[in-house]
Image (cartoon, rainbow, N blue to C red; front, side):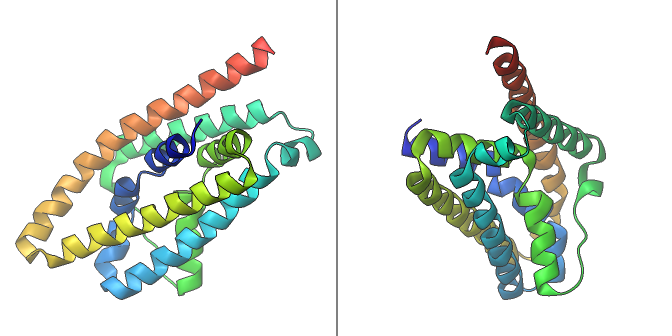
Length: 200
C-alpha cells in the first residue's frame, strides 16, 4: 500500500459526504462558525485516536491477548449493522445532539467518526506505511474530511430556504445509497478476518 492509496482508501471509508448528512440536524441548529468549531474539535479527537492505533498497531491487542483478526471481524459486524440501520431507518437515524461544545464534539467523534472498522483500517495503514507516514496520512485524511464537511455546510447555507428544503429531502436518498457501499466494506472486513484466521 502506497501513501496515496492509504489516503484515498481511508478517505473513502471516512466518507465526509455521508458524515455531513449525519450531522445535518446539528447544522440546522447552529450557524456556520459554531458548526465548523464543533466539527474541528471532533476531527481532532478522531485523528488522535487513529494515530494512537496506527502507531501502536497490533501490540495493543497482543497486550489484551486478543487476536487482531477477531477485532477486524467485529469491526466489520459493527459497520454492516450500522449500515443496515441507516438503510432501514433513513433520516430517523440522524443524530440529535445537544449540550456543551466539548460534549457534542466527543459524541460526533465517537461513534460517527471513529468506529471499530475505521480503527482496523488505521492499524492496517500503520502496518503498511510505518508510524510516521501513517500518522501523516491520517492527518491529511482528517484535514480533508473537515474541509469537505464545512464546505458542504457552507454551500447549503448559501442556498435559499426553498433549495435547502430540496437538499434536505434528497439527503436521505444519498444516505441510503452510501449505506449500501459502507455495508459492503463491512462484509469485506468480516470475510477477510475469517480468511486470515483460518489460513494462518
